[in-house]
Image (cartoon, rainbow, N blue to C red):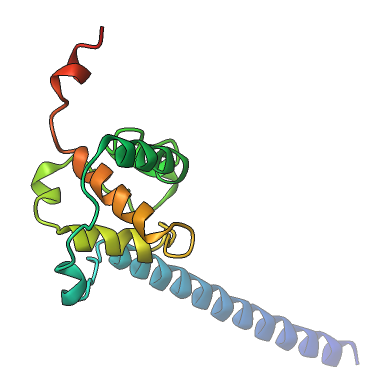
Length: 161
């Protein structure tokens, strides 16, 4: 009777060990797939509809518009993109996808105002959508501000008195 109990217990222990090994291997496989997926998503380009790419900013660049956009930017965007748009905000390192460097003229000259407006409006993880959080004019104002990051500072900004 003791031998039967030990044999039964040994078989149950083997099944349990085999089940645990399978579960552990499955968990490792799921983690690997998730990491590969996350890595591939990080390099994914924005897909912006062609008609949106052709949109022109309806707002003229003016000091009041840029000041209002700057306030919004500091509240909503600077945590990741940095105070001056370099992608070096205090929360930038918390995300697997680095925030865009909005001062990179080489890149910024390849995107249209419509594309920037779309990206602000729609968002993409980890960046939130601002379509419902900001008015259309506020989002267009942010486009003007973002464009200003690639321009050299005006003479009055270089030498403040």
